[in-house]
Length: 144
Image (cartoon, rainbow, N blue to C red):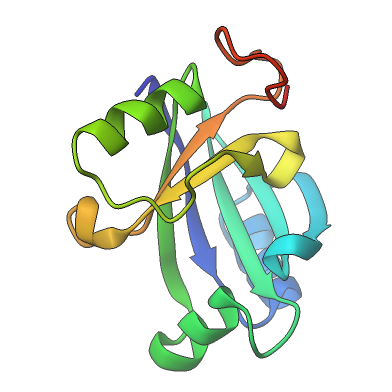
């Protein structure tokens, strides 16, 4: 792990949450986009070298919607930056970690992402992130 990449909060109302973090805490929006395959709209806010990510479900059936329905809004996951996501997944798999994502997929801002099950990361949903500018190490056909 290179560093903490972001902390993500699940929110039922993205615009209301944005008001809190931009007006009250003075954070600035870096990126806002809809991620259809995850059924969320996400916003990244800059916090020093890291980010705060706010995620809102697009429907009542996706994982973030179910999270909010069962727990309410709040801390959803913590993300760590890795230099090579495929390599990190291979190492975790070999160590017996339970992966939610067996292969990298696209996340906010074109980053490659993959999630670890909370059972394998101290009870916290954990995301691994590879910056889109970092090509995957020795991986033909890798998503870059």
